[in-house]
Every structure is written in C-alpha cells, then in structure tokens.
Amino acid sequence: MIARLLREPLLQFLALGAVLFALYGLAGKRNGEVAERIVVSASRIANLSDGFARTWRRQPSELELQGLIEDYVRDEVLYREGRAAGLDRDDVIIRRRVRQKMEFLADDIPEPSDEQLAAFLASNPDRFRTEDQLTFRQIFLSASRRASTIESDSKQAASILARADGLVDATGLGDPFLLGEEFRDISPTKATSIFGEKFAKQVFATEKGRWQGPISSGFGQHFVFVSERVSGILPSLDDVRPTVRREWANARRLEAEQKLYASLRERYEIVVEVPRAKAAEAASP
Image 1 (cartoon, one colour):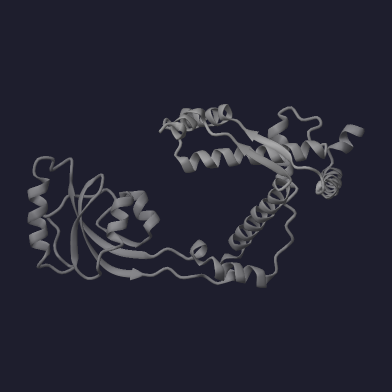
Image 2 (image 1 turned 90 degrees about the vertical axis):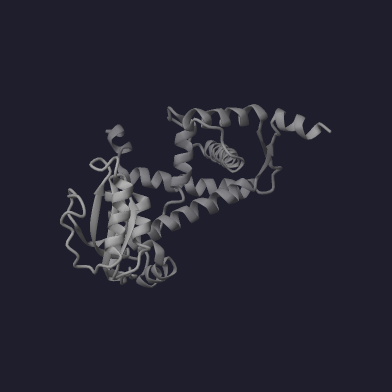
C-alpha cells in the first residue's frame, strides 16, 4: 500500500514542490555564508580533453574545452545544491540524477497566452517561416554512364542550352534520372535529401527563366531550368500554434534553468587550474 502511494504522480509532484520550497529556503539561508570553492584541477581538465578526444577522434578546440569545463562546473554546482537539499537520497547514479532533478525544478512553465505566443512568433520568424520552393526541369548527365566523356558532353550540352528555352527537347541530350526530369514545389530540405547540400544551395541561387549549369551532385551533372520560385512566408499563429507553444515552452524552460543555475553559481568560487603544459609554456622566455 505504501509503495503504491509513493509511486502516485500527485504525491511525487507534491514532494518535488516541497523540495523546491526547501531549496529556495536553503538558498536564502546560505546567501550570507562564505562561498564554497569548486576547483577544476589540471588533471580534471586533461580527463575532460581525453574524453572528448576518444569520442570525436580529435583534441577539443579552446572554445570546446571551455565548454567542457563550464559543463563540469554546472554539474558540480547542481550536484552540491541538490545534495544539500536531500535530492540524492535513494538514487543509484547520484550525480546524474541530482542534476536532472535540479533542472526539473525549473520546468514549472505556466500556460502561455495568445499574446505571448504571437510575440514569440514575431520575434523568432526564422524558426517558423516556411521554406522557399522551386519548380524546375533538369537535363541530367550520368557520371557512371559517361565516366570518360562527361566533361566534353557537359560543354556540348551547355552550348546547346545557352540558345534554348524551357521547352527544349532533352531526347538524346541527357540521361534518364530515376526521379524524373521535373521537380515541382521542392524545398531546400527536399533538394538536399535528393541531390545533396551543395546542389541544393546552387540550384536555389539560380535565376528563373533560363537554363543554367552544370550543377554537380553525387549522380553526375545537372542543367536546370527554374520555372517558378515561391518565397517562404511567416505563417499565422493559428497555423503553427502547437509548434510555437512547444518552442515557447522550451525557451522558457531553458531561461528558467539558466536563471536558477546562475543564482546558485554565484555562491561558489570557481578555480580553474592552468594545465601544466600551458603553465610551462607561459613561464618560458
């Protein structure tokens, strides 16, 4: 019976609320105390760098290393604060769970109003703007079929197409392409998924109303004729309300987490040791 009650979501929510209240109470009591010290030792920095190198097969840049150090400091601050509030009880992987619990405490986001969502949509247009779209025809020269002649064939096609309009007969000029000759209302994302990023960037930079190319892809060479271009638009709130609400809530959550962490971090003195190699380099004439 007791075990079942402990698993009830409402009881867990009330318990977390009590912990949050205790945490802020503890923060108020500790504001006047001498700051605790967090030391990021040279050996710890070396371990962080080695872990990065094992994962990414290269050494971290200076900026990446600073990020690793800051994440370690964040982890240590939240762990100490969570432990002080008693959040480490009954956890197997204490440090990770304490950090998760501390960040969860900042997740109590109220329901946004339409005014807040509309303001968020207007201030973040690039997140919600629809993609540009193109309609184009292509003449395709296969790299596999024309392995030894594709360069000369490409020059010949370019010469012919320079004098042609969009209705040119491609018979005998190009090769069959699995997905066809015409692509309607295609977005940069879709073009990238079919032809690759380099092709997508080039084709969306082409002029409308004339043959242009060749544009290379992993398949070969492409000559394209763009017949229609539609610019992306910022949709109305009603059209993207669930997406805007999700992004708004995520932004508020991150802001609340950062504010909580910043207030907790102020109570610590952070000491980052200089790695031995850099210290020796700085000391040498």
